[in-house]
Length: 279
Image (cartoon, rainbow, N blue to C red; front, side, top):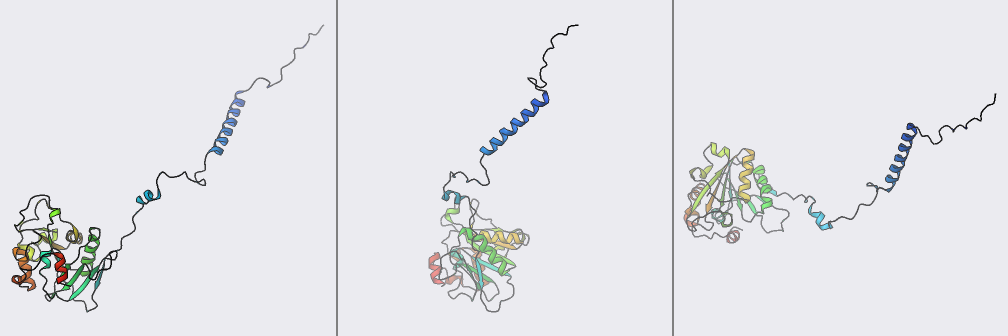
């Protein structure tokens, strides 16, 4: 019996790729692509960053401002009196005229470290013979220092009650007021409202003129007293150049301090003249 010519067998695996081999090849090629892409990518940790679109001056605008130096209350080395019951803050030129030509003994001075050296402190505290403390703002306190200055006064002096005598400035009023008509009004903390007011402010029934904006040291002292739960009243007057005798609150404060208001009706009301008068 003749045997036929055998057909050549095709080698196993030649021209035929199994599904497992295809999947393995795809995985290998994907790994190679990832390696090539990782080599081409920049290292965000060690590589130099690209140039910024902002100049160094522009970047400084986003930086936090340096901490502001806080005001310092320097108390006289004389034996400190007991805690004062009443602190009267004199801010308006009309209230500053209540100080006698020879003011009471100096008790403390409030210094602002970042301002140029001045011959006198902007705020000086006098000890009245009655035991009340008189804080006179002979110089202007910048708005960004008002909060810290108020905190230094209230926290260091520790008064039981505070009376602030301020004014309505023409640039801070959003309404109409007669230029020559004396007006007085008050703002109070909750503690002062519960007890009917503080000192001479008890007789002031009207509120601050509607539409007016009260800011600066006086408003900061009132806010600090509200935070600490102290009784405080702030009386604002209009106009700024009025004489003390034209306001009932000024007459009452003068009587409590023993000042003859008839002798100060002719005094000047400008802050520069007052500063020269009492220094």
